[in-house]
Image 1 (tube, rainbow, N blue to C red):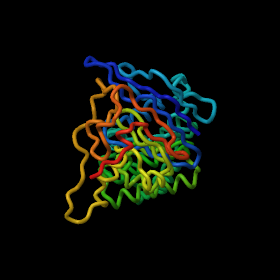
Image 2: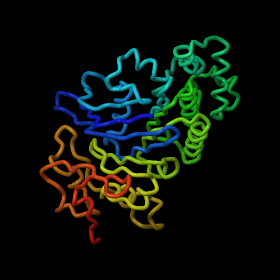
Image 3: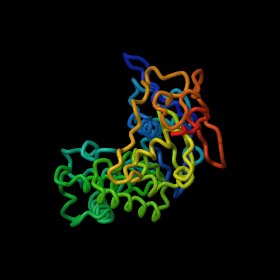
Image 4: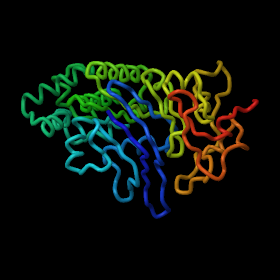
Length: 327
């Protein structure tokens, strides 16, 4: 469905060039869920925005790479006219914050029917009925009445459901979910994830799940890419990644999950901050924060490359991050 190769996106600012995404490659098949995880600022969202032409240019610029969609369309080189036909129809996106993604001045009915009018030419009562059905499918009570409401009249969880309905109303082939459960309570989070999974199974949609929550990844993802400092540091199936995490950063993320600690035990946190993307280190970017490996062995003169350590399990070949500390 989608094959991304060597994607590099940078932002040219007054303070220097921000290397947001560097040489990122991944693929996702029909009906599959790919998780992209990492701390804030690791390049997860920028990778996805680059695919849809949503990077502001300037200051952003895609320096290299290809993103082949459905075998023949390179999203990175496609014209704006072609991208407008694909966005919202064949590829849809659920954005992080529904309150800022939904237009506060427009009723939900207007915002839900817009994709149908643009991409399918469906208008009037037919489009409105499709929108009401979409709200009902995502669990909005009394959709015939609520569809005429404004975004501020919905709770956070309900607004997120509206965003899902909007993303799925055109039955896309690929759905990109950018932190779809951020700021939602645990109960609503599960409902949202179950809803996405249900619609995926019904429509055969490929899903890219961008999140910092490894608990979400364990529930819904088939394969996982772990990103740090704009690069993929480890890539494997979800089962393999949780069973045998190889990179020190992946192990640190897993160790920081509260559920892995005994009651009353001090929570593990990754020390320090990620390196500046305007002045990235020449060697291993995780060197200064590596407490679970052997930082003295980390590469210092070149960025470690992804290598296949076991079947379909790729990891940055940094000796210090692959090693395990004695503690």
